[in-house]
Image (tube, rainbow, N blue to C red; front, side):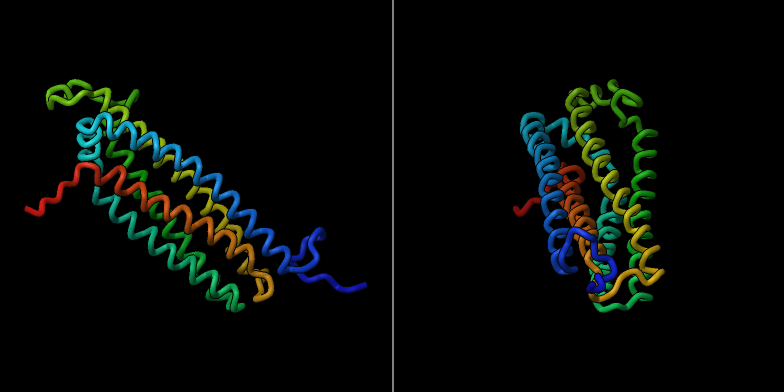
Length: 223
């Protein structure tokens, strides 16, 4: 009876077949997630066009500095994740562990900064239904209902993104533990590659959220 490869599930004929199936499954999953974010982006864009003043006023009060720093953090984490995938395919276990830990640290740093930003939003009364000063917006001659609508989109989209990132951090923690035990080999590194795709997807979503939410009120004049 032939000896099966380590890491090969019983219902696959080979590691290559298993890896291709796993990657296909991840691509299908990401496509469904793209539909979710696509619906949110479409709804946001429609209301942004309908209530430009309220959306611009709300965006102006977001912390662009934290948003910009978090963008650099996530882009750096994409680099470390890509290098981790390469290290796994080359069988460089020690380097793989270090790169996964770096990615975990950067992802956690993003969430930490996001928590600081949420706290600041609360203190500045930018949380609809919990801490929101309607009178302040009326004094600025801005419809507070339109600002609240912008903030609802802001919390829903960034909240869902943070949830996806949290899931990714949890999975990377498991991958790091397995990598430290020598679980992955050049022949069996598909889990790292598969979750690398997921991580890059989360990072790309943020690159759309940054201009949609933080740069709404940006004005550039060429004349």
